[in-house]
Image (cartoon, rainbow, N blue to C red):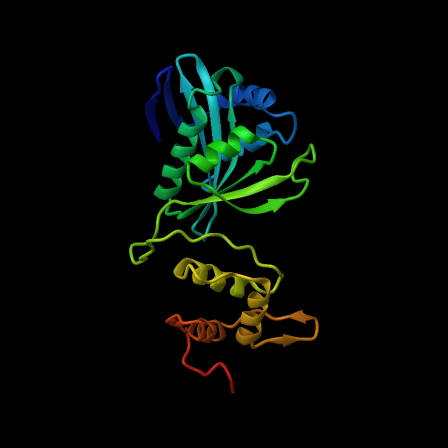
Length: 250
């Protein structure tokens, strides 16, 4: 896989990394990161793994940057694991070009969503990701070796042909370990009605209405039938697709 992109200041070729790129990659990794560096073994594995794509940006002067994309098996998720640009090539569009190449590669592999982590002190990277349509959806405390926090971001790359989504769907983090179903329904309600305000109280109320599991060791999650009824109670039309015909309540 290879393609070229022209910027006002230089030409950038993006292609899959080859074994001869290993030494320049290790040198770039040393320059770009003070810690959390990829090893020689990690780079070599990424070059041959079917679950990864290691892309390099080059020109006649050599290596400009790289991006390591993980393509998760059995899911529609891809993850931009690492991105680095040579100090002398920063501000010239190399990072944007690599990100766009990763997005195209993820789509080619059937992925709908691209996720990444970025240091909360890397303001330039945060600004670029936001401009490219990435939205924040989570946070990791002391994620990196230098104890800085990570901001989790994601971008929808494409929708399935049968999806009819014409409005943005804002991310809402669940407030408890057991209310993922409630938070999902709240996201839908927020997208479909400008009058709806997602609150922690309603999150728990939806869970109470939708759960069918009561455990002595902890709280159970929401049942799809219960979520459908909770959605109907709030003015939506809901369908549930079941893999068996037996009633879920005896």
